[in-house]
Length: 357
Image (cartoon, rainbow, N blue to C red):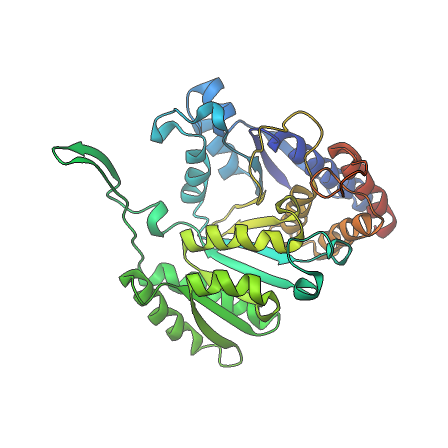
């Protein structure tokens, strides 16, 4: 099982290292053979090769069975031209690998019910899957302009969706819901945007093939409010690219920390797995980063790319047990208590994983 490891920038290298060690641990215990090969992307690639997504890094990703990504970006590269910004690596990988859907599970770990931003009685039992369209919409539409004219500066970003782009992500959302609690909330802005009007039409067409799944439409602003008011009502949320980007980061706080949430980008032959959090350059290299999201992303890789459900579930259980035992990194530790380091958290997960395997 060949895995392209793209640590990226900031804490990406630290958290990805713990995910790799966890996969290696699983490999030794279950006689699985992993072949890891590393390449640079993002700001690190820009510094070393002059491009955020070098051709060699993209080629490695294409030739692998799966991609494990860390994080990209940071203030160091804020002044770079648009096509040289580290984030172009992420968008480029999604486009070139045809990763048209992003899965972001949001599940509250019981041991952290008192750590989340909302009251524990509001979020206890929270378990939702956000299904985000990933290669269409305003992030990829053309034309894209930033100009200066006689009347001042002006800019254009283009939001484009085709019916087939909407259909494929909607169909996957319904298939996921069918295996869960059979509820889909489709999120749009159909009262304003033509693209959302099409989105709603196509989702309703797909829903006719899933009569056992309940569909409800929500405007994006209403959904943002409802996630905070009553998160337990949600099972599967399906939405377009920019809305999904924003809502999934909002929902991340239901679990206590964005450092806990993994994601999977699927659609092409090679899938990509990454933590939801960013590169956090302010704590990079200090051993403060939480590796759980990256470790859980590795679990999603085992499940979706390599069909190893038993090992994936074991990793997830080991994480829950570690947190239940009171071990906390800096983002989770209560004031006045001592946090453990990035590597110590990874080691603690693997100690519990050994018993499960």
